[in-house]
Length: 243
Length: 243
DNA sequence: CTTGTTTTTTGAACACGTTCAAGGAGGCAG
DNA sequence: CTGCCTCCTTGAACGTGTTCAAAAAACAAG
Image 1 (cartoon, protein in one colour):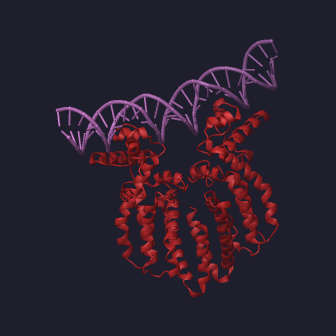
Image 2: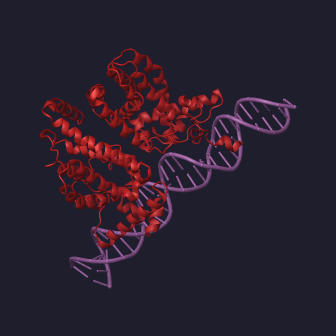
Image 3: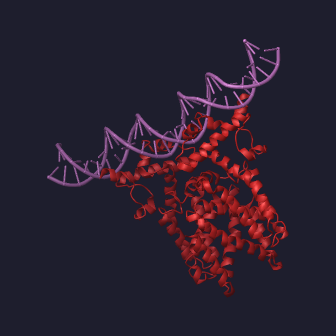
């Protein structure tokens, strides 16, 4: 039994993991230790960068032994994931009210994306570490993988809410897939932003200014009755691609 | 002077590096050793996977000491890059005649992409190793970085040739940027293909079937006189994004 | 309190990518 | 042949992420 407890428990089933993204924590003392390790890691990542920070540095900064970090986090990357999960939790509080503030679809999408970018701002370059491994859907920490399903769905739900009663309205047959497509669009923007070294990431702003408008316009155009066929074709491609 | 020779030499300037992607090789004997190491690496990567193969394995398989690999390749990933460079060289022979075989723009694009995919086929999962680090434009091996400029340009030139005298024709103001956009499209397809585990990567075929047609149609539509404004807008976004 | 159990902590040990000082190997000048 | 130079090769050593057996601490039951 002790052996089984040592093994990381299944994630998908436990709601709490959406919040903490951590290995089991039973006591308040342990929770505090976990937090201290995570904070030490983030602080060092921010100052020196991800690759330049060693697990030994982190442990020392947190005042624990080297192995302690691995009691709470499965890997160095999972420390970054824990940061991501932390902000995701925050987003679930902040974003929904922003979406209901307006009916303008473009403004809603913009609000969702802007909020997330602002959350990541202090650790912009850090997330590269996540992308590096997460691009492989087979990796546990991939945003496309199974284990991150809850977080991904929560994120897609922002967009699901955004297309309800929006101006312009979204054609019924797009309602099911559009949220996921918008989420994908957001991932692309975030990726671009991570490597955007222009002052204040102004190139990302330009990209957003240009493309959000375009996306909305496209939805608008595809709503015209004559466009039913094109819409069906696009959706057919999408279906074929998602096995 | 011996010290300076030890340092990796600048790459962009030397044409030979487009072929070999290797540290200096002076004698035929050395060239053969380099080849033996690369072949050993590729064989092991193919059998066991990239992460599961150690540099010690590779050296042993090639019959040299551990450090020898680092005399010819700067890193484990550069072994993959050498494979990529090898196929790129091959592509420069094979692709141009394919492009002139037809004037149909869709067929031309398809031929370029199909050829590359076929070249990578035996080592499909291997290229993940390149993507993992190459996604960061700051890394030497990034396809977006400076050091890979020659290879990238050679690749873009395939598309530059493809839009000359094509059916449908490409509007003049797109001629400068379209090749790069098509190259980007190709990178996206390859990325998708790398992780496409469907039998024979049939999902990638479906994606190609659907989107190439779409791309051509889009170029066609954007050629209409009334679309001049939209075209200008898209190009303006592109300019803003490329600092 | 004592004893048994679970949770947390420790630090040495391991495997791997990478570096480097040292030493051949082969040629070339004197 | 001797000394010297460049190219190539070696394998030990280093730093790092990660694992693990064992100890300590916290807790539960009697």
